Image (cartoon, rainbow, N blue to C red; front, side, top):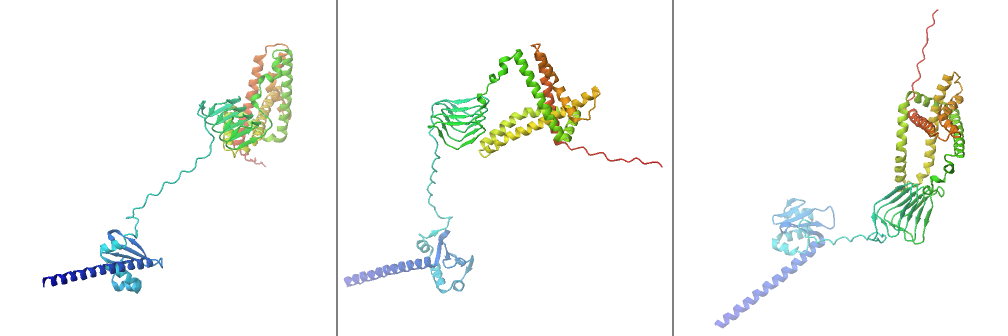
Length: 440
């Protein structure tokens, strides 16, 4: 009897275990089918607290469904089973309701591998961006000196073999010779540039108004810009090339100086006559500023002379460094020509004013502007002419010649400033015409 009872109990336990296992298999199969159906119809996002958000794959404007322990919400509003069927349709509503019947643990197990929200997701660390390849540069040597920029005016620059310039090399009015390494630009203005067989220039080479001599082994990392104004090279000029220095203090030198001064006087008289012919009104207005604002005009002219060279150098360097502005350097001769015309107009105005004073003092007529202008120019140069004439007889006339040069310099300076005042001042309004009543 006992044995029979034990056999029946063992059989009962076996049946129960088989049923449990079969139920688990059926439940697992149903859960897998549910997950597959959901992912086919919806985009699944797992929320905090094991909640689930569903978004229809068929329509981007479809409702958003959230399933949590509190129930079902459609577009953020709680919904009953009937409302879910009404808004989603029978097929989608059946899937949503099946998910809502699951416990929190079942939902967690069902969607553990699904997509999570960015707030709960643990994103993998992106790989570091690859470093850009280094720009090709010439091999740098560590030996030799390392200097900054080299800027020179009027003399030559030489970079010897093994020498390293950690910057730019700029020369105005001289030549540049490179046999070493320059880690910037090489600029030559008014002079030539020579690159030896071992020269290395990492950036650009710019030559304005001079030749470029480049050996076969020379390396240039940037562009080559040349603006030709002939084979001009101010660095090769020397004052000793003046033949007058060979006769300084002699009769021949004094004769040369006298002829040179007379020639310059004739040229100035001719230029003054041309100014009177083509611009008499403007010249007379400038002469009025010479007479009424002499000190102011002289100060403006002197300040212009002080600022001319720095402004010119800065302008040239800026145009050269921008590369695009290099063609604009061709306009510099026209700028110098314009300044020369302005200076001649001012000098003529000074001569016209002084000539009027001289002829008035002598009691001569001043109706002819040409005669007045020429008389004033001769008056300005008279001390220098007298020094040149006396130099033919007396060798020591340096003091008188210096006075003459200073007087001429003052005339040019005041005249230039007077032109500036005429240009930037408003013309005086003409006086109103008045009528005198006629008594009958």
